[in-house]
Length: 265
Image (cartoon, rainbow, N blue to C red):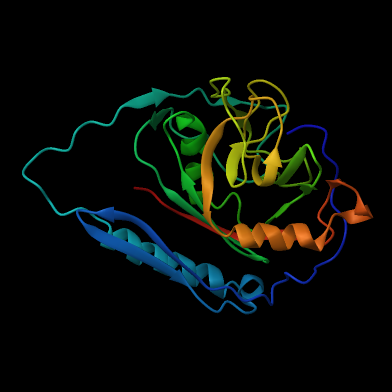
């Protein structure tokens, strides 16, 4: 989203000492449910223990989710071609290459964002914005969002979002490529929506936003998922306030993404 300001403030009540307990059921594989738990992570974001712990859990869950072999061949998944166009004028802020150009339009995936305020769990939707979901998973897998900050928070009658994915500051620090919008013109942005941020048509990269209340905006932002657990985390971030006590700016206390992992199903 455009017209953003930089960050300010210091670590606050949702800091690295926060504790969170989350238990999320993620999909099923041949009738077997997979449960992923994240417990007691005091001081973990600062020490790196949380990252290793969550990644181990992810590997276990992925192994459990592997379908049992079947005599029937799996149907070919429909794919969508995505053009990821290099932006040499805005090189990658972290070492990452563009994703492969073929994105599945079926299935989903789950992304876990471990923040200093708690865990946010996002369920992906590839039905409309397949390239955006494909890109998000790619960046998560390449640790692009690890150890980053969410530089913008809004809380007004028109717009209530947390904006993340920029590496340097709001609107600056992308993956070194861009791709097209995926919108129908009928998009709405209720609480829990996860969508791509941009600086104009066809400028999608790594920036995304999560709607914590509502977003009365034009349907020009690609919706690729929704929060299925952790809206209370967003509520804590909003309650901590915005620097300068305004309606649009940097979170009063920095919001950090310690690590992000994904389970694709």
